[in-house]
Image (cartoon, rainbow over all chains, first blue to last red; front, side):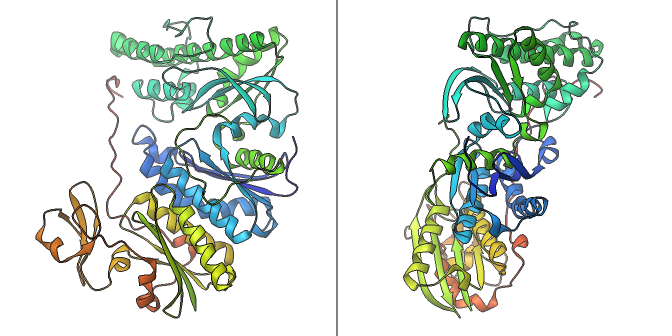
Length: 333
Length: 191
């Protein structure tokens, strides 16, 4: 991948993380992430208007911290990237307005970045590998299997037909009374639990590259009802985690075999789940398939991945105008 | 002193460039989804027409609401970002004042309700059939001749604005976000 020469800033406000990252090519100079999850915990999920209000409050402090961490001045920047799709429109609008004002004031190019593409390209930041490969993008809002022929050239192989995996974690955690966000809560509760104690369904059967997590989630709720006070929460959390991560890992490996590729990437917030990382690595090693997973800080929503994608897109000659809008939904480029 | 004023709390996005309380240039545009584009394109156009550089602006002011939450945040974020980058102060302007400084002014609140501000009083919510709206100017279904907040109206009270640091410029929310806490149908007894 070719990159813009010099520091590029990336702004991410698509959901409940206010983040600003600064990269020079593949080198991350700063990646400041201010998560709102503590605030949203009491509501059991992300409240769009509350998220947008917090972005407006945090945007400048986070921007300042990123410049400080990178030890550069605003005037050293050569480009700006901002998530403008997909996401919560009210939340996206804060970052987009800030990015446009920065572009006007600094007189440097800016580009709207597809959040999903930024995740897909994030493994390139700290790894080197060839193409094509299969990418599992798995987060609170998305669960997609994508064949990445090269940066910018993607084919969707499959995706969830109901809940995203991260959403299923959130809902299962709420059912178990474990709090929000569900991924870390389930992972923590599952420690020491017996993953085979409560057999749970696996959703759709192969051959398919699609996923369904609604049945697993409902089975968790029924198990809670059935066992009531005798429920072993740790084991049910472990059983749920195993059910979801095994489907994700097995289907990704099947997609890699079908696509005749030897490399897999695992990106998005749920890629931080250690059970998923380990399961994917173990299954892949048996089939001589290489797995690349970005550092935890690059798995969650973050500004560095936006800056990285922007640096590449601007380098190949793409720019956005001030007319760029925020969009709730958007397919991959 | 040159001031730039941005307003996007209503369907009309307006921007004005003022010098010592006199308009140098102003523009407004009806917009649905792209207030930031409307404000910044018009602002750039005004600067170009006047052959002025952005650096010549001494103060960036923005409509703090009430009005569209998203729209207010767009104008506020633009003003505070300009202030931060250029090291200039910023200021908040009431949407009521940008509609009319003296007359009673009203903007839509939740469905069937309006925020009404009469001079010398705090804003209050009134139903759309309130007689108090008859003497007010504003916008929304209750007004057959809508008057939107207009940035150029800040010219008459620019000297009264309080200059603050960019980080402190925030929307003025008159209501809390509408939050429905999800049910916990399978919450565990004793937890």
